[in-house]
Figure (tube, rainbow, N blue to C red):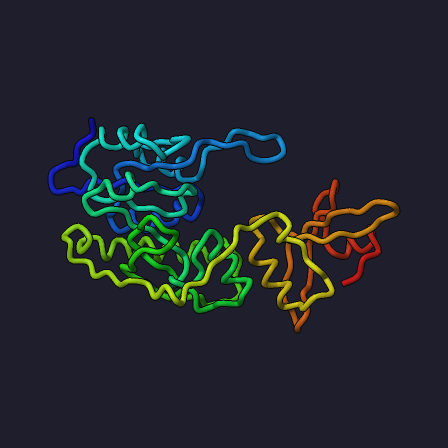
Length: 294
């Protein structure tokens, strides 16, 4: 059984992708290191389906921190596993990828807090980063909230607007900025959380907006559409599902993935692409290959 050290709170962190790692890094830089990381199981990645650990697991191993990778967290089994490790003071969640059941949410003495990359109640749901970029919302930000049983619904503990010298940015750039700001916010309010002095502000639920789950189809670009909106879409989906369009070559319909693009003089300028079945090439090379024009 794991028990808290004297005067040190027992904290578990739930998170999976790079966003979670960026939060962890910002927290650890300020002396806040969790005792346990709970993350997703290893998963097959790429065309060869190589079993790959999630970024949060990789971070935990490098830091020498214990980790768990449960397939399921609902029911009594996982809750019992956590209770066996001690009396938890706080759970922190950042892009974990699973819905937190109530027997986990309310287990710690100070319950569970979440890092959400938007200024709640705006952009609740699974894709706040992509949605902020698509909608040209430079004034987005990050929220630290107390989780409850509803999605992104709990009271707000702290918020901060994004400080972005360049706009628009891609999801990794925006995510890293907001995650690191979120980790810093957690470190700044943690003493009040642990002393029970944190001020909670209920969200104005009448102003809530919601985001949708991103699908592969969202990456399809209409090259004849508004060039700035195309550039926003390219940035929003650059990491996944990537932006793409189709061309016809002979009797074939070929998918072309955009790997580098810019917005220059009012024009969405594609610089590099990967045609289906080919290697990456410049737009000039692609034009020679396909006859396509911007």
